[in-house]
Image (cartoon, rainbow, N blue to C red):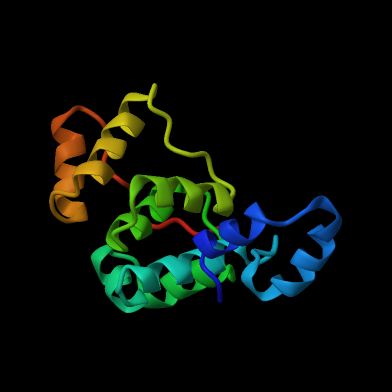
Length: 150
C-alpha cells in the first residue's frame, strides 16, 4: 500500500486524461466510501507503532467494542469516543481531524472552548487520557466521555 505522500508525488505528474488510469492502477491504495475510516485508522495505528489492543486499554474502551468501532461494524455518535481512540493511538491533531471527518463527525473547532482545550492537549501530548480529562475539568469543561454505541 502506497502512502499518501507517494500518491501525492504520482499525482503531481498525472494529467487529466490519465485520471482513470490512476484510479485503476492505485485502487488498492485509495479509500473507499465504505472503508475509509477503517483503512485510515489501521494505517495510522501501524505508523505510530501501537497495537489496537493497547489503544483500547489506554482509551478505556473494551477490546470487543474497539474492534467493532474501527472495523465499522458498530457506530457511535459520540465524537469523544473517536477522540479517545486517536489520543491513545498518538495521533497528531491533523490526523485526528482527518479521522473525525472520515468517521462522519465534526472536526474540532478552535472557537469552541472545549474543542480548543482538546486541540491544545493533542498538540502538547502531556500524559494519558486521565491527565487530559483532569486538564479539561480543571479548565471548567466536561471531560471526554466514555463509549456510547448506537
